[in-house]
Image (cartoon, rainbow, N blue to C red):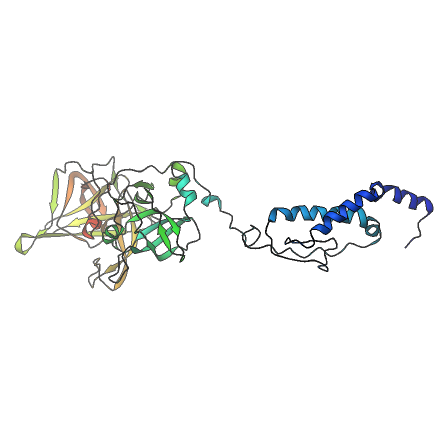
Length: 400
């Protein structure tokens, strides 16, 4: 090392902050520092190597910062000359703080999609541990009362995985019987819900015991929600509604007419073939292509091309089918089946579905489907959002 001249030594001594500290000030600083030595606080000394560092239970964490400052003052006033001639030391080891101080396991940072939404459900979203969009699955015969199976379609907040699990809905609003709601939902036509859940002591999900903690997603195309008991609309706000994304995917267009005559008078009816006992049965047929789809209804005497209300589409769905390819709830075989989806996004009819009749209006137009030119029949649904398929599988029609 180069030897310092007398001039350099004088300049360094003049810059030494210790030269401005009186002996009485040093004594007070030392006394303050030593007063902590036998306390129950965590002691941190200059040097950072871990030698001479004591750790004891921290009773008042607010003093830790003060100790660091006190130690830094002592180090600055006593050790400055040594620092000028020494290489940088190894950084101090991490300080171990007790659990609960906020420096232990990192709290997951919410993604943009998990930030609280603006609107009327902001506070409930903040209070909930998990906010999920789920499909209600059939309750098993051995299912514990109130613990219901679901298929998690979307996680709006929380760490749940997409897929099947169980949730506790026994804490639902007094007017809502979760078990009854799940009883009416079938795997072929599941009801979709928006739920706000808290995690119990066992880690399981429990529906929050507050009004509107369980809402039915009535229209999965637009994510509109209703009270699951009364079907009365419940406004969750544009922000939260925009985050729900369980609309049909892979659907293709079908022939539609302007407007939607759902619930209106159907002037015409095409009935199925009359069977024994006066029963009638016709059959729906669906034909799919990448560009679109067409559906027909036929009996033993006639066949018509079905045109649908605005908003209807077609898709392929994997459904349980019997040996003839007809959808059958208890069938062991799954098959890709052409289906019609109504304006709310739910299955309205399926290929090979037997129907006693279709109601609507028979037009003078013709259209081609699967190589046949047929009269066009414009279907009139019973109610907006109605689905003969859901009705057949135990899901009640929407209230008018």
